[in-house]
Image (cartoon, rainbow, N blue to C red; front, side, top):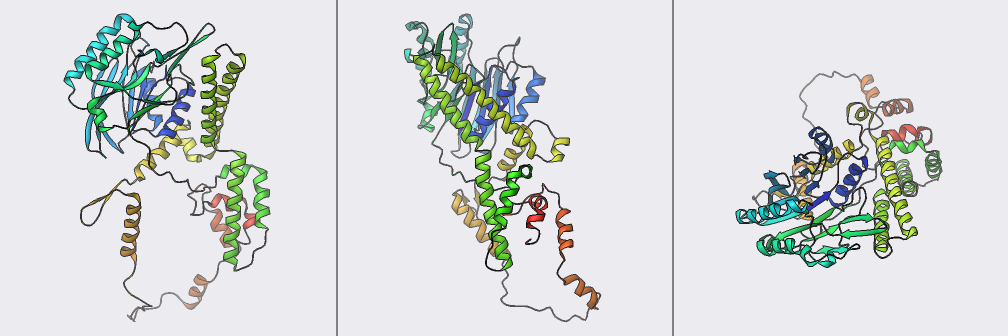
Length: 478
């Protein structure tokens, strides 16, 4: 199970939506808490559905400050809102894989000293009420040790008392951190201050269920806070390479036409069908290489950008006034914005005309539908004929294959002829000869060009648009 919490400091920016989309695509969380949304209800209802989750709920901002939203999917967990407060949303969550029920709370603790005691006392009172395993995640606006802060004035010991007293009272602990420790930064004059204000806290009964749980932190991008990612176990799910799909927008590049023509003109020896299949394989391989060189891998580029940002942030810890590192960080953030912009334009060109006229013009519409479709098509377990559940992926695959073979394979061997029933012949010999004769080139071309170019491609990844665009090259062999 994965849970992400991020103090976004407002949901109005376009970059927030792009960063969230990439974050969700990389980590695929089961639940997402957005802290400090800072928008009214109408803007919130426009924004949250674009993230593609099955369910969501929220607490509105009060006087243009605060606000919490929670979003979740129903593939591995069953969740419902237990209670909502101005600074917390408490969720009742059932882990379907472990068959365990728990409470997970998204927290936005007050930063003002006058409100802190009341808030933390209220959490202590909740501890006596919540009898299920309990985990809290969010922005606590407290540090628990001198190592939780770097830069600025050295904190006094009294700064650590409130958080540590709470942990001791409810018998909980902060989850271990994998990677960079700090989740908040601020520049004061020429000094950079880093603190760990966001964290995940788990009571011991929750840690008994997930003893390997840990948290990791994202980069600082469009918010002063970094997202925190709570992971309960190591991610052992197999990730398969996505199949090749030819996108018709690539036809706008003249270099691709030259490459297709070059590969298609290479002679082959064998039957005509064999030669056609070999040419298609060569073209596919060349297009894959061309795509990798021309567009690169968006995910790899963003990850490389994140690694460089993390490296520069580490250097700025020791040299906050360095002109070189500050300008480098500025360039990396601009590069990140350009990558997201290119990705948005690129995906926009690939959508169908019907989606542009009938759907949401934001690229999130495409991603949310694609993600929802993948979730609906995903098979986690099946029940066999004996009533036993099968959850091993390889066993599920073999069970489907054997079931379809048994269902559709004919039990009869050899050729079977229909008995003579004395039915009249309604098709003449001339009509029959016309029906079974080989179609000519014009008929094949007419049938091909009648197909909508963006229809689903075949198993080889090439749709009708490829053959229509390059008909003068591939038409004869096709």
